[in-house]
Image (cartoon, rainbow, N blue to C red):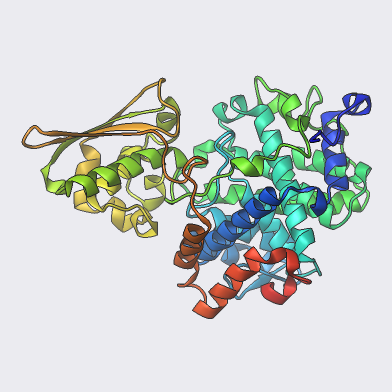
Length: 453
């Protein structure tokens, strides 16, 4: 019979911080259900592809150039690059590259990009230290769970206040994952979570700039450091999550601490993870999906478009209401640009996220004749699109569930295809296939360094 691993009177006397710490310290790969292990492999596959695809973007080049002189001994590899840095800096660079395209996974229940902070630290660690694949996957699942549950507890007030929850909650995931691999004790894990809490950072004001990708990188780096500090006996407050001046109370007007511990070991947020078919804010995906459908169904000539009217969930305009976009990073957070991409190009891949794309005259014209209004009756996975043509004809579509969500998930083969699109420009095809196999067979790998060095 399924039961919470921490059910019973004793668990109710423990703080949320210590209960979570105990769960991470005690959790074994044998405790993880088969479907969750498979979803973890999908998440790792998607993460590696995103990190490889972003590894030579301008933001990553700038970070490596700026920080390499300050790195310690260059022992750790960076995904997709030949340079080496110390493990903490490698974690940072992995985090930037995996998020720079905004193509990494998302848990819609809290809008965290959960894999980037956790896996960025783990891959840096595993490129230096012997780590069995099953231990890597176990640490990834535990870190993912810790991160997402803490995010659940403070969402939506935390996010509404302007915190970028990938950075703020992500540091806990990286801490838990690295702490598990270095075998922290329960007390040390409590300290590590406290050190993570006091480093939690990331502002939504950074959306549309390189700084957004810094958030999961810093979360990975700081989480890794928190675990190392705790291992060395560096203490922290023991009520970092639930204390009156702890993470929840300070960063969220309202919160529900029960979401951190309820169903530990039974309910896994990995089951609610999603993978993006388009490299932009996930709330734009229904609009893009619908506009592509209209273009394909009616064989639409974009020159005939007179107006585009969108009805979207209110959060879409809170997050992605950029109208006057001039660079590709801004286009990722413009529902108007997303609509224009779908109608003009019939796709919204990496080539549609460039400076060239946002300044394409045809795309710009359609973007400028697009309007959007919030509709509280719509979920964030829905959109209503009306395209009015110059001859007065109106084309409409309603997206009930967009491609990539938990109800229309990308298949394993589609994720492999996305991986290849990212990785083939960076690595030889044979190595790309080897990495795909590594992700699917990770539990059988004796030492992850054999594939990462």
